[in-house]
Length: 407
Ligand SMILES: Cc1ncc(COP(=O)(O)O)c(C=O)c1O
Image (cartoon, rainbow, N blue to C red; front, side, top):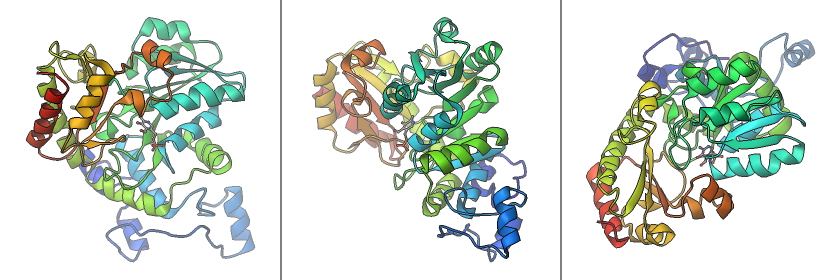
């Protein structure tokens, strides 16, 4: 298993953590960690096999449990979030389901943010209740509502640090302190997909576990799906041996772990540029508020209700912003259809600027009533700001605004 990383600056951790001199020497001095394309591992003797299975001896057994390429990726992810351990999965949803199945049982209660990714919402609103788990959806930025929602049997509080799609920023410190004061065994689980560990590290603010859809900014090339849970070893053990091995089997292929390692090497450079481009796009859209744009959603903009919290929690802009068009879904459709350079697509954190209308795509799993209740407007447009030149992105958005009747 990879040795623990030495403490370096974040940028160096992106490049080196989990693959030091020892691992390099063990792998024919290959500069890049090799892909271990194997489902299973061999043992020197029956005793060796028995001791590895019983946990007396450390070693690889079968790739549904662990794999050396994935171990490098996991050590790097853990180091980036400043914690002990990580477990990679086949997708972000795989990592979320594995976490819930590991720590919840029938009769438990869970609080989930009312603004979350559509498939996470579908899982928590439709699937978990089938297993006897009660889930309440609450605005996690409303501390009074959060306190009122806590119950004796609340086992998990789940939210996205910056929420999909309305970029609502939850104060991780305030929520974690409140939750742990009421029930020290309740886990605060933060989905950090929108922000990545470059912009935000929830465990520094009191969270117990962090989950990722690595599919997005962490891999960054839009070429593979993957997910992860990061946190203390005491929690990651059960997640690996129950949530991954016995429950979901949502294993991250070693080839995808390799793509992830490559993506993480440039995380700091890419996310910095995404953020700079996002800031420019947000500044452009901000001028249109009240002139065809009803609301601008970006926690790092001074007009955001989350601006003060963002200064405490975020290192710069994240790569997603959103806005609500006064003309509702008709205007959103005109805006989307007029795009010539930006791509109409879901997902985020890729080099290409991706634009979607959440009401008919990422959040179509919410009923129209639930969308209205939770503030996901029909005229909402979400943009994952890419790595193209900011002027080219803004020029395309500008002509789309004109097509949608916004000056
Ligand atoms: C915030 C967030 N979490 C989780 C997911 C699910 O990730 P995946 O598609 O890798 O399963 C997504 C996907 O869009 C997301 O936006």
